[in-house]
Image 1 (cartoon, rainbow, N blue to C red):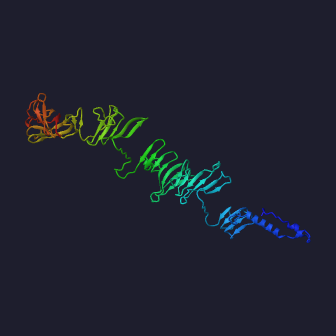
Image 2 (cartoon, rainbow, N blue to C red; image 1 turned 90 degrees about the vertical axis):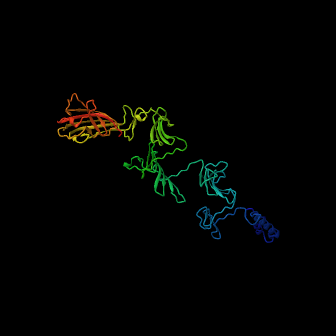
Length: 490
């Protein structure tokens, strides 16, 4: 004990002769020495008991109950529960418990302000959390907090009050590998997804169904429901899906199994108006929208032609603006140098007006088969050449040319008729008849005319009302050329 000083010089007493009274060790000297020893021991002990407050040095290893506590003096290692510590502090088994309150630290570093630490947070014992402090230059206040795990299991980086399982504030999160992937697993056993970065493409992948749901490839093209950038061309292996390219090309493709399935649905809620607007160099040039529940396609102002598909009247009508206002007598269909070809109508066309008199509801061209007959009976044969008609509305234009009419062999009885009109006559129609020796009268002074009645042409002598009868016919062959127009209700 370094603080014990010997008062009596026992060595000097041993060197004195035996006759010298000073050679005798007296009781008072023993009392003095034992008092000094007692004082020295007391200065090394805690006043509360026999715990030393000073330094106890050991030159050899120290073992308490073999391996309950073992100090390897030469290696400067301490083992608890092991007699072969491999680290500065080695816990062979059991737990390491800190029973102090908030602010209790595990510290790395030597300086009081330049260190790293794990610190207990939350003063309430049942709400214990951990805070992690690190620094490269702590400063006077010690290292700042970098991460925290709350008593609820939330992890905060850059925040002391994380509200989610992982809460990052004022910083970035980086995942780095050859195939970085973030898994998102649904505990309800629905589709599980992962976020993937591979070869410059960012993807959302459906792990349950093993299919890519969305991808942004290295060119910046957005693909949804497909990994093929040419969904518009199924012949070249294109697939269905949604593709938007950096050159602003939008492609949408869908394979349908019924005629009611559409590729795109656009739903405008509330009031009528534009559903789609079209622009050229930033200027609006047209739109598609609704008017009173009808679809409307038109330009941007009254100077543009527009059409409206009227559901109530089942009509396609011209309009002049986005409000669907009707446009009357201002819109043409085609132009002088850009015409439509064929127009197929099952109804009629109103020309020059909107009244029933302006309606042209029929146009027809064809052939008909005339017959030379008697009003009572009989007929005459001929060699057919041509017989045509044109029907425009209720007007029928007819013509025929009959050669080699055999008057020498006819058996006509009664008035002579040309029957077989293509449409029944509703009113008398005048017909011109050219002939060669049809009758016994002089051809040049007794012209033949006719009028339509029913399905036949009744022949008359010149401008008179006298009918041409069988008794007027010549007895040789002749030719007939007939032309005329009549009205029909057909």
